[in-house]
Image 1 (cartoon, rainbow, N blue to C red):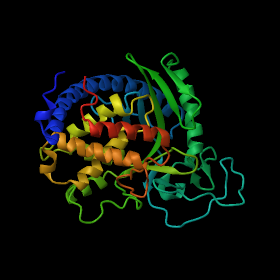
Image 2 (tube, rainbow, N blue to C red; image 1 turned 180 degrees about the vertical axis):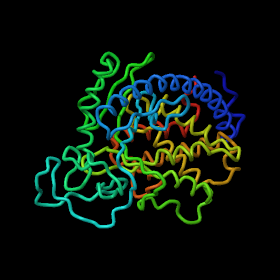
Image 3 (cartoon, one colour; image 1 turned 180 degrees about the horizontal axis):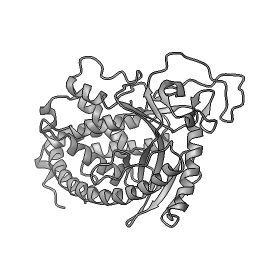
Image 4 (cartoon, rainbow, N blue to C red; image 1 turned 90 degrees about the horizontal axis):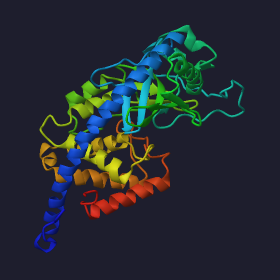
Length: 375
């Protein structure tokens, strides 16, 4: 590629010229990525639907993940080879926030502790069977319940065995394998193009209820609109079985609504996000389990949209894209990215410091010279 004479251009014009070339290249790659991911998702969701249908037959507490010809809200692409699959549970209806605080003194085996367990922080919370107006008797059984709490580690233990059995029953042993050296339930799936890893997470879906920890939005914010906020909150939230004692709050459906309605004013927010994700996967943070995922990038986008709410600030791709990269660089450098809805939670709290520093160095190089990544 031949560049114009550098000396004849101002610094800002030179950067904009290079960004125009980056724009064209990345949009081509975005289209190619969309086609490839679409094919992988198609294969993955057939496998997931098959497995979870069998699991649901074996244990009524778990629902089958439905198959969809369009968007499947239970499958989240974190990276091209890393997916999050939420598996809904059933038999828990009419959720309400716990009003009384109590100490917990039990271990996962049910023995007594001399000191209480640590209370949940950030996105995490306890979950008691009594928080539901209706709950199937199976959720009170000792295989998932200790002293009235529905315990994520116990749920995962039951679920893991069901997944192992379903792989054999569904004759998927040559296509699906368990990844055993992990506390969560992970499987590897062989698709026609590559191997992908899925985290299968039992999920309590709680529609129409907005949790007290999610004090969103703060006052005097112009994005999103007040009407859009009420719509997003109406989708409620979910609780994921991701740790030993505490359930993790999730807002996947609310976040998807925000993403779907980004550019109703004709801006380039979605285009910037797609290019940011492509550069992350190609240059800044590639790999099977990257320290920075699409969910992190999505959160960076939401924060930037809130800070720059006006349509005119999202008309020029090059300026808007560099603004996103600067925000990402700041978060990665500081190892700090606030969750968009639960702002006391740092999404990078448990990420590898060394890996984050490596990504920060690559981002810094790009900001100095935005042509990096061009052929």
